[in-house]
Length: 262
Image (cartoon, rainbow, N blue to C red; front, side):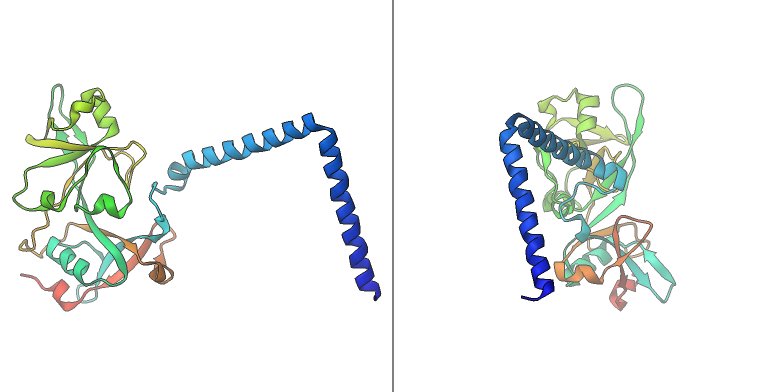
C-alpha cells in the first residue's frame, strides 16, 4: 500500500472512531440528546412554516402548483410594431386551438366593479376570466364551485365567484351565501362560489371573479384579454425570463389569421 492510500485509510479510521465516540456520548446523555433532537425538529418546522407563509408576499409568487411552468403570453405583431399586445376573444380562441407549447391557455381581463349593496357604493378589484382559469392555476373554491363552460357563453346569466374576504365583509361569512344575489354596477350577479383566502393571482386584493364571455363572433379589433398558460414541461427551458417579473414571458408571433381585422 502506498503512502497516499495509507493516509486515506488512517483518516477513515479516525473518522469512524469519532462517529462511534459521538454516538456513545449521545446514548449516555439521553436527556441532552432528546433536547437537541426536539430543538432541531422545532427549528426546521418553524422555518418551513414561516417560508410557506411569506413566500408569496415576499417573492410575489402566488400559491400555484408548478408556478415555474406558468407563463404570460404576449402577442408580437411586427407589422404594427406591437411587442406586448392584448388579444381579442376570437384571436384568443384561435391561439388556444393551435398551440402545441402549452397544456392549457386561459384569458383574463381587468374589470373593476362598483359594489352597489346596502350602504355606500364602493369599488372592488375584479377580474373577468375564462372558465378554465382556476383549473389552469390548480385552484379550488372553499365553497361550492367555480365557472363552467356554460357560464362563459354569451347568453349565460351573470354569475360571480367572490373572495373569502368579501364573504366575511358583506355576508358575515355565512355558508348560505351561495345563491345569493349581489349587485355590481347595478347588475345582479348570482354567487356560485367562494374562493379560499390563500388564493390570489396577479393581485392579492382581487375580491370578485366573473366569467369572460367567449364569443367567437366578437370583433377582432382592440384586444382586451391577457393570456396566461401552463407550459408543457419540455417547453419550459425555451421560455424567456423577464428579470422584472416573477413570471416567465413568452413572445408569440402573430400568424396572419391572428392579425386580420374584421
